[in-house]
Length: 467
Ligand SMILES: Cc1cc2nc3c(=O)[nH]c(=O)nc-3n(C[C@H](O)[C@H](O)[C@H](O)COP(=O)(O)OP(=O)(O)OC[C@H]3O[C@@H](n4cnc5c(N)ncnc54)[C@H](O)[C@@H]3O)c2cc1C
Ligand SMILES: NC(=O)c1ccc[n+]([C@@H]2O[C@H](COP(=O)([O-])OP(=O)(O)OC[C@H]3O[C@@H](n4cnc5c(N)ncnc54)[C@H](OP(=O)(O)O)[C@@H]3O)[C@@H](O)[C@H]2O)c1
Image 1 (cartoon, rainbow, N blue to C red):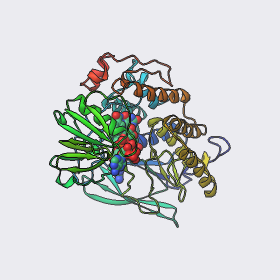
Image 2: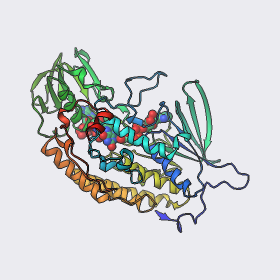
Image 3: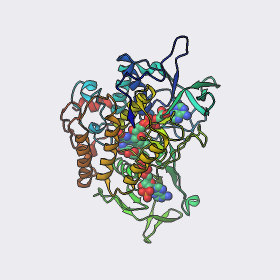
Image 4: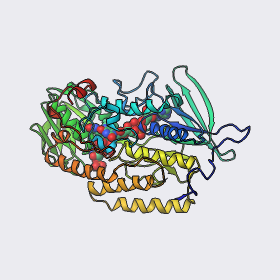
């Protein structure tokens, strides 16, 4: 990539000339990525930049994306697929210090140090805190789903068709750029195994898991070998499941599980309520939770604009992980597999903003493709979490070096993530009791008073009372 000669010197591509209409940017989704984008523009505006008109379409009634908890599963009140798959007792699975906003610290939000692994409601409060301070709500049209986006080469415009869900009214508006921040942990990947159709119990995907208490007293089969499988196995055991068997496809997670959780090879088939695994072991099970991941799906995009990727650290076709090489006016945020979440989204949002403002110029397509290929080759050679953490941190560093995002200690967050991996090896029920220091303020987190494994109250009030 090449930077133009100094921030602000190259004229903003979108500056409105005399008598011209101010140009427009559409943001799809007001989850953490979309909010980061609105906030990034707002920061530039407050420093005097001429920013385009921003319209963020959010199909839910509030911001926060997945962090905006819903009791609903399946279809929403309008017959649309429910976006959120977070559950009642969800806690951060990484240290909060590794997702802290450099321009809005946890200290600033809570006015006191808080432990490193907060429950969902606390993180939602923090996310909303920065968005409120930034005043970005005015850009968001809630209850409005993006239905289709088309690019018109002749006009160099994106025609965005949206539906006001409450009114049932559909309309199309033209935009100069589109930033897709619609998330990718929302359309469940649901495999089928022999015997599923005659299984007498409930089979659900983790996207529809809401409350671990539902499975108290049950023998559970959890399919999958990643974060959802790990956490849902722990949550259900914590809230009273009799036993949990985790069945993996590639490799066992290998943690020192508490009594009542065990790992098995891949499920071969079900014989009524008996799960038979690849090594012939058999277990009676009452319910099955498919923690089998998600599909990147963009039902509002056709072939030419839609990203096709799996859950990887560096999707093909996205220069800097953001710009669709075939049409860089189409941008994506947060489409990567995520060690880093909010920090990555901020870095991407600042970078996307500066391209829109004409502060950073994108190279020619061939150079973009070469750059993507180099990152993807590096990703292919990675063998474990330490390398993956470094990879994503390097990606973030690459973005940050071009923009005016406030300084913070990125290397400390790498070290935190690597320590966190070790902590999980030592104690999968105890890693959330560890404390880390802030890469933004240096504040050490206080230790938890009650171990996470013994805590069943995940409310904001209790969490803050305890520290
Ligand atoms: C179960 C679960 C637990 C997680 N836990 C953690 C964690 O502990 N820590 C962490 O850092 N990360 C966690 N994550 C990762 C999560 O991806 C990020 O934290 C974050 O929510 C991603 O933000 P996003 O804005 O990219 O996407 P999302 O949060 O998914 O938000 C996307 C938004 O786009 C909207 N939208 C989608 N389609 C349309 C449309 N057509 N029109 C209008 N609006 C639309 C949605 O309604 C939603 O509000 C978790 C993910 C899952 C699934
Ligand atoms: N805060 C929390 O506690 C928490 C809880 C849950 C999730 N999350 C977050 O949610 C995101 C998604 O995590 P995720 O675990 O749902 O998805 P994921 O990381 O994409 O993992 C999907 C898993 O499904 C397995 N799988 C896919 N198809 C399968 C099949 N046919 N049979 C058996 N296994 C199959 C995969 O196995 P292979 O490895 O073999 O492909 C992989 O282990 C992550 O960002 C995670 O951090 C956070």
